[in-house]
Image (cartoon, helix red, strand yellow):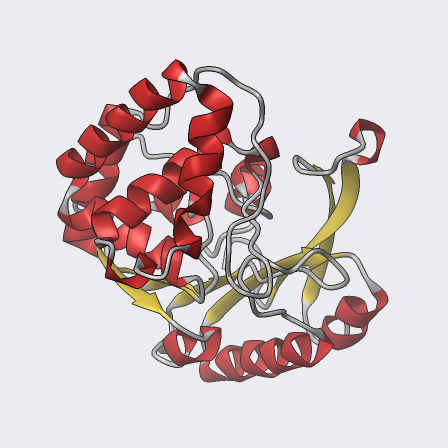
Length: 280
């Protein structure tokens, strides 16, 4: 690294977030690589932990990518709005939460500034049940209140450190995973963390089905043949094993499901798939 790494953590919770798998992923990283790509960035725990000199992040969620760009460009203004949300929430928690949640139903919502949209998104993420980001088919956020009368919506140092890193080392993209991954060249490292097979996939109003999983596999193989280092996480399902177990390494890991409604069902099996020998 040619710069000092800062302590940066995700600013929101996101379904499938990789904070709990950082150690297992780090243990399986290629020894050396050039550019780093994360086509399904989500909450971004891995790219924030790695802090590679040149990083490309992408997600299909326009709201999430808007949030990354807002933190990059106007972090102080964002924190000011978030503080206002905290103050207003404490006055009348339930009423205020549902008032802010309903804003995207307004006919003039598209005219609202990215700054205000991002502040709303982060506030709702901190105040909703289990930090579950979910929208309906119309694209409206519909998760109920978590019944907390007070909560912090941001950490000042974290927001400022993330803003600095995004400005100096990261290209931010919004779109389909293939478009950004096709930029990768021999020696680059691509980490795929897609919506999981047979799992809840409504992060946006679009679903990620078995045909998308197959399309992702074809891209994984194409990048591998190109000489890229490629890693992918997913559920341990018959489809995923059928696609990847002939040519690639598959390691099974135990995980905790943070957003399952039933506490006794919050454990499961995931796979970490990669195309190189560890230490290569």
